[in-house]
Amino acid sequence: MDREFPSYVVFDHAQAKGQSLSATDLPEKTSYPLIDSVQAAATNATEKDAQLCMVGSLDPAKVKGKIVVCLRGINPRVAKGEAVRQAGGVGMVLANDESTGNEIIADAHVLPATHIKYRDGLLLYSYLRSTKTPTGFITKPATVLGTKPAPFMAAFSSQGPNTITPEILKPDITAPGVSVIAAWTRANSPTDLAFDMRRVAFNSESGTSMSCPHVSGIVGLLRTVHPEWSPAAIRSAIMTTAVELDNKGEPILNSSFVPASPFGYGAGHVSPARAMSPGLVYDLGAAEYFDFLCTLRYNATVMDMFNGGPYTCPGEAPRSVTDLNYPSITVVNVTAAGATARRRVKNVGRPGKYKAFVTEPAGVAVTVTPSVLEFGAGEEKGFEVKFRIKNATLAKDYSFGELVWANGKQFVRSPLVVKALA
Image (cartoon, rainbow, N blue to C red; front, top):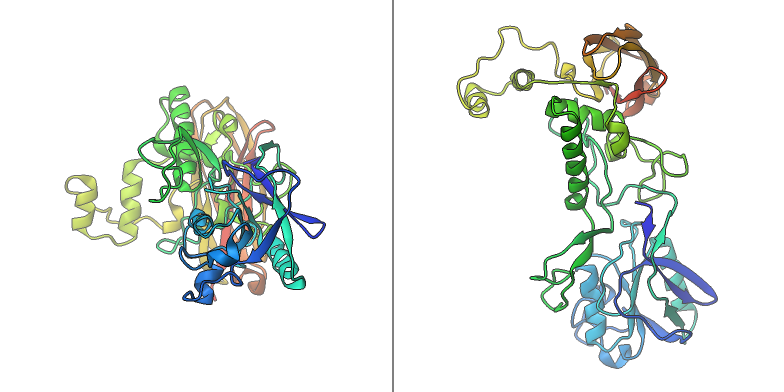
């Protein structure tokens, strides 16, 4: 999402940009003493508890009137600020550890506070160690739109590969899910923490619980515009029109600011307007899902439960798990003999001709047959994608590419994920 709530910590003629939704702020142009929470440890507290700003771990005599620097981890982010507040501190800087890196979150803190990145935290801690009288200031949170790069993947976002059926790429898609403004119940506080008595009508939330409503809303729109589409067709439209580039025109990054992969964002970031007119869709019916489960050797009891009655697997099982008509294509443990995936696409646009364009995964040769498909209205056609390992060293780990069916207007894009047999 291209929106931030920046709040800066200013120190030693420098500043570090953090994120915050603190309802209170410090008086302008006034510096306060800064202290590392470890140096503010209470007598009976462990160094680790003080470093994390656990409630009761800070000495009020050392904290009173100061901005305390706390390390992220273990206890809730806002609870760290409450520990500082209880000890008499005037503000908190929450610094990421190495594992959380660049992921900073705007929280409704109970005192003036900001959340900074790992590297900025290192600079701040270095400053604290360099002088006996460190001072600093936390600026009032603001709202900034059009930030770049956006989107980028949150550190907490679930990652692939699929551990149960690696031939099915997961996740399918990514959608806005960090610092989303959402309606909030007045039956609870904005932090959902027992000590927080505040009540608000709206709150900033992050997680799958925020991404899911975005995708659900898109599904609802597509269902309204195309009531004849199946759930699989709707999923296909969303996936094949998603984008892999951010608002700088560069590949979507992860929270460490290095390029993410389909194991992070699936087919890409949702694009609702493009999904309305995908051109082609990869469709599926219930029977194909059941046959897929048959291929996975689900027993008759489980199959009957899923079907709501007896279900008989076909005498000749589907050729491969890889052949499920999914909008992404993943082949694993590919040998020197290569691998083949089969797909069908249905025209949901105007009659016309589509040509296949492939970006090959590293170390892999890809051939699409036929490479041109011509459709009438509502027509469905099949094709094969053949994979051959050219360089086993490059393909020994997962390698990524893409297949795009294009007609000059629509671009029907599917991720390609390949892993050679070790």
